[in-house]
Length: 457
Image (tube, rainbow, N blue to C red; front, side, top):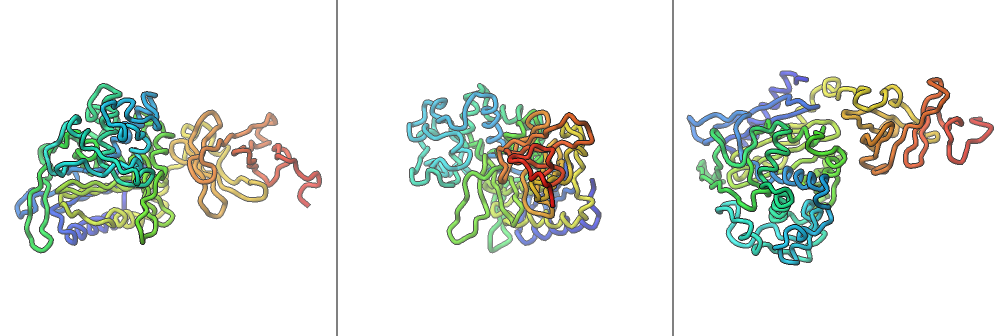
């Protein structure tokens, strides 16, 4: 699916304007929709100097904390394999941790609710030669007053990276490369900068001057922010968050990543940010974006995905100050100027759902109240009150069976109940004991409590 030239021109103009207003030496972005990159662009010179190489969508930048998404996926892979539980104290595996650190759980670390302080004691790790794990351990600190509250912790993700390595017998990077990047075809994502990567630069706030930033190997802190990538590769990561890949994570686990666990409660502001498992969840009106921001000295990036619609954006630049908080959503807003007929997702097929779409899609009634059931990509279903309103989504969990993902029916089972009377008697639905029928209070559908013998009168 392609974008109209007018929308592409608007996206190009938005990116050029952002590069100019933020004074980034260079910037690149890629937009995806329903599994395809539909636009990418770049502007500026990677050196920040006249005559330097022009940035392209294939230019690699350091991605900073976007790395945490990959670390979180690695932990959840280990959970799915049964090697560790989300609620196991990490000290059961990492026995060298002091008791106050070893007692925290993988769940608490994934959601930044462990009470660990953000940074290790010692030199600023982002601008210093990376320390080894045995050097990092005595530099970890925890504040009991922060336990159960959202408090962003880079050190927590360093622990998670070491946990996955210890459980698997491979280094954190080897696991990320082999078990996540390769299956997702993210072959431009690397541990270190490669040929043609953008250099990290700081721009003087009051003059047209540049300052080179160092780019050390982060060592034991690498799982918190080491990697380099392109906007095309990060778009593939965004597509995974929206559509999944069974050889990386089961869909049920992928959806759990995106459930808000702790709210980032900033005094004096409305709540707009929460955190799932290694993912930011950003509320913008009724829309929920998942993804992550990233920064290292000389670089800023962002991945933002509307998983419901399968739409997202990746943006990277080589400036310590970055491009501001609104660029990603501004680019998504421009892309939304595409007519809805072009932006619509492909209809589900019988192969997607395991059930003929015409058999279950359409109008249903809970008592007299009308609902609409819609088949989505990947065999998911969405049930919502007819005429609008937020509904629940469901993922396949067996023959004619789905499990709720969100809203009131999260975790509840939706079953298609079939009768022996043949196609002239349509099936009905059981959803957490609620009965949905094709006609209001259909007396042939085993309505709990029965129906009035007089019927509708």
